[in-house]
Every structure is written in C-alpha cells, then in structure tokens.
Image (cartoon, rainbow, N blue to C red; front, side):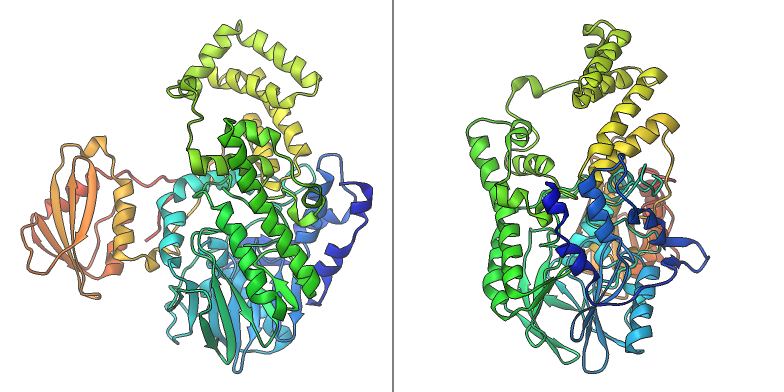
Length: 603
C-alpha cells in the first residue's frame, strides 16, 4: 500500500457514520465487579503508528476500536466496539430484534442498555444467530431471560446447534489453548503488545451462554416475519462457518452479510483451529448474494467491522470479496495439480493488483499465506506426497538430530545470528526452534528465539500472526502461564443428550479402558428418550433403544440436566438406578479428570 492509499479516508468516514453515542467509560464489568471488557485501553491507537507495529495493521485497529451505538439506516442500529463482534438491533412493531448477541452475557446486556438509553426501553421481540461461532451467540442471556420463558423467536441456520457444540466443546480444550495465542490474551494491550486481531480488537471475558434456537432457516428464499419485520434468508453453509446465513430486510433495503464479507481477507482455516472452510462455495454464495439482493439494497452490514452504503459500492465490495476467495481457491488447485506443495504455493501466490490494493482484501485476520495452505489441506490432507515426510520423528526428537548434524547448539545459534543479521528471520526462527526443542533448558537459545519472534511479530500485517509471535516471545522469556478457561460452562445446558454422550466419549482414556466392558441404559424422564451406552475396546458408543431393552449392567433414570456433572467426573444427583451401581464408578474411573486450567464444563 502506497502513501496514496493511506490518504483514502473512506473507511474512517464509514466507520464513524451514524454515531449516536458511545459508552463512557467504555468498560463493562460482571456481577463481581471484574472487568470483562475495556475498549478504553486501546486509546493509544489515537497516536501515530510506532515502529513496533505494521502501519497497515495499525490503521485497521484504529478502525476496529471505534465504539458506540451507530445508526445503519432507519430502524437498524449497531453497537460496535463492545466486543470482538457487533450487535445489530432492528426495530419492529412492538420491540427490537437482536442480531448476534456478542461473546458474553455482560457485554450483550451493556450493548442493549446503550441502545435503550437512546432509543427507548423496547422489549427484545426476536433474536437471530447468523452462524455457529461463539462470538455470535455467547451473550444470549444478556438480552433474553435464560430458558426463553417468553417464547421469543430465536432464528438460526439449520445445523446451528450441532456445529456450535462441535466447535466449542468437542475440541474446545485445544482451541482454548490456541486462542491464547490467536487473540494475544496474555499480552499487554499496547504498541508493544496486542493492538487487535484484524477482525476486531479482542474478545470479552465474561460469561458465555447459549439459548437454543426455536426457528430454523432451512432453505434459501425462506421468508419469516418477526415482530412485523419481513426477512428473506440465504443459507451459506460451509463458508465462514459450517452453519451460516445472510439475510435481507426488503422494506429497509438492508442486507446482513453475517461474517461472509467483512473488511479483511477472512480465514479458510483459523490459526486457533477449526474445520477447513470451502473457499469455492464461499465465492459462489457471495455471487448469489449479489444476484439475490443488491438490486434492492442501499446498505450492507456484517457482524464485524462497519457497513458499506450505496448500491455501486456494495456490488464492488461483494464482487471483490467473491473474486478474492475464488482466486485463492482456483490458483491453489491449479498449482497443486502442477505438483507444487502447499508451502510452495503459499510462497508463489500473488493477488491480482486490484485485490491487492483493496483495503478490505488485506490479510488482517486470514492471510494469503495460511489460507493457501488450508485450501491445499482441504483437498490433499497433511501429507505433501514426499516419502521423506511420511514418517518423520516428532518435533523434539527431530530437533535433537538436526542440532547434532549441524555440529551442536552453539554452531546452530551462530548460524541463526548470521541469518538474522542478513534479514532472514524466518530461517533464523527455524534454526533456533530446533535448538529449543532439542534442549528446552537452553536459556540463550530461548532468548534468541524470543528476539526473532519479536521482530516477526512487529512486522506482521496480520493481527493474529502478530499475537502468535509476540505470545511465543513472551512465553520463551517468562514461561508458560496457566489460563483458566471455562469453555462450555454456559453452553452445557443446551447440549442434546447425544452431544453430552459424545463429550463424555472424548474424555475416555482409551488405553486405560481397553479391558473395561460395560453397558448402561439411560432413561430420561423429561424427554422420554432411552439410550444405551456401551464401553468396549476403549471406545464409548451410544444408540437409541426402546424401553423394552433391559439387559444392560445398569439402568439409570433421570432428567437430562442431571447428566451434566458426568462431564466434570462427578456422579449425577437425582437419579434412580437398577442394576450394578458400581458400573458407573467403573466408567468414571477410565475418564480423564478435567484439566484444572481448561475445565471442560462447570456443572
């Protein structure tokens, strides 16, 4: 980006357009007075860009840090800058429809209160989840009573609940660890630390909840009327989330693009971990959105960043976003079919000039480099076809052999210093990483690697790359710090019986359970469901049964919520049993205890 592009203030004008009021101070606390969100801490972004931050990322963070209630168009408002994502509010006949209630209950409640302060105390008469990521449903209980006793319509794309659980519970422990790096959660918020993620500033740290949807969107073209507001939906599965949807408000001439078109290149696979997304269908759904909606649209907004106004600008924006994902997909396939590996393609890939110069196509959150590798992985898997890479040693053992071959740690460190001096910090990091893995007690190597990570982070345009590098540098200098992370506590009440059983199966210590064989029947009085759980050969499986099947070692009768303590390794209360009660103790004995730093659930 040249100096001329930095002089373009269109994004700043759009990010500030329609400001009604800001929350002052921009701080949200929980019931125990703990700060769960502080947007004011990013005040340092008002100054000039320091040498420690990539100027393009600094600009993006300045835009993302703008906080307050904004009018999008008549009857549609957004609260931005009170969490990683936006909350949108659409005024209906009797109240207001909330779209995407942020990450935490506390920030969602604060956003709704800010809206009501300036637009009146309207009741929430509808809730829409655009997709299955936690920053778009976690604050549900901040806008609707737990359990939804009033029967408020809660709209979501088909498959929403299944995918929300699969992402946030099944692999939640590993994702939580990665998220510490991804978001820079332990870094100071400063020019020398975390300045943003590119998609937003960071995520709030309040209580996560989930109220199940009661109205599924199952097809494109489906229309629903919520509180007098007509909405036309477009399903977009496999794009930014496995279950996602765009939707149009015909009478408001407004288009919600969920997280399918934001002001950055998004991830085909996130660095925090997730299923690989389909760049091919992503591009096709954006093209479909242009055809379906733009002729009757004056403003397009999304669940992150700021809106785009004017039909011509909306079409340009969506067309370029479409071409961005299509180009990365098709060119990766072209080159892999020529025999190139994912790493090679990532080094070769260049965007067309028009896309490379578009601010909204910059790699602030996703990047060309790691998205290309993700597309390669989607089609070809982890193996690059080289037999030498088929059965490699794990990192520590491989590192010991590399260091030995290169003449020992001191020689490898000398080579790394030379590569650093000549500007090749990437290979310096590779060399020093081998030394650290070969001997984690080598403090000189850890210090040198931290310095290289620091340089790589300070030069990164991508917010999450910066956070990964700087968090790695911090841990090399200060050691690994435990982070308490209740991944699924607020979601557990919404899990289906099958999802709860799946979560238990993931906890079984396979080798420990090899010789344990048992069968437990579960009868749920609140749902009328009957399941048989079988443990054999270290695998815990389950299936529906009829009430007449009674040959299990133990039969347990209870309500579904009473099952939750099992996820924490505890015996459920309020259950009736018939059979060998020791069977349940045998099951708990072969389940891994919850990680105290990353508890699976708090029953």
